[in-house]
Length: 282
Image 1: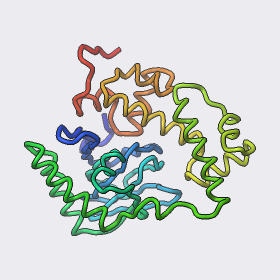
Image 2 (image 1 turned 45 degrees about the vertical axis):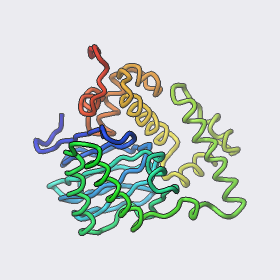
Image 3 (image 1 turned 90 degrees about the vertical axis):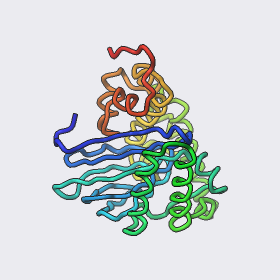
C-alpha cells in the first residue's frame, strides 16, 4: 500500500455525531496531491514535520502545531523531514460546526504552533476515537472544538470583501464554483467557465488562479475527488462514485483517491463502515 513500512492512514466515521470524521496517519514518503475537503479540517501534528501548500503559501508544521483549514480550500501535504510526520485530524461538516457555534467560522491561520493545546487535542482525540457512547464522544468533541474556535476562529462575515469591484469579482468566481459543482459528472470547457465569470479565457485562468491559488484544472480534479469521497461515505459503489464524479472509470478513481487521501476507495469504505452490502470489487 505504502512505500515505507511505518506509514498508515486510518479513517473513522463518528457513530455518535453525523458530519464528523476522525483521521489518524503517519506518513514518510507519501505526498498528497492538491485536494479539498467539503468541511473544516482541524488537526494537530504529533511528531515529525509536515510541509503543505495552502492559499498560495508554503507552511511548515512541526510537532505541537495545530492545522486549521477552512472548507473547500485546495492544499497539499508531504514530509519536511526524513522521519515523516504523525498527525490526527477532525473533518467537520460546515452545518455541524454552525449548529455548535451559531455562526460560520473562519480560520485565518492555517498553521499555529500551540504545543499545550496540541497536546490537549491529541489526548481528547484518542478519547473520542475510543468513546464508548455519545456522552463521552460529544463531551470531548464539544470542549475541544469550542476551545479551538474561540482561540483561533473568526466569524466568516467579518472577512468578506468590502469594495463593490471586489464583491463583483467574487460573485463571478462563485458562479464558476457553482457551475463546476453542478456539472462535475460532465465534460466542462474552459470557455463555459470563463463565460460564467464574465471574462476572457486567459483573464479567467489568471483571475481564478489568483483567487483560489490553483488552476481551474487542479480545482476541478480536487472537487471530483471530494465528490467521490462524499458518495463513498454514503455507501455508493466505487464505480457509481467514479461516474458521478466525472472520472472515466473505477481504476481512474482508485489512482486519484489514493494520491489524494492515502487509501483506496475500498479501504476507505471498509474503515468507515460504508462498504455496500454484497459489493464485489471488479
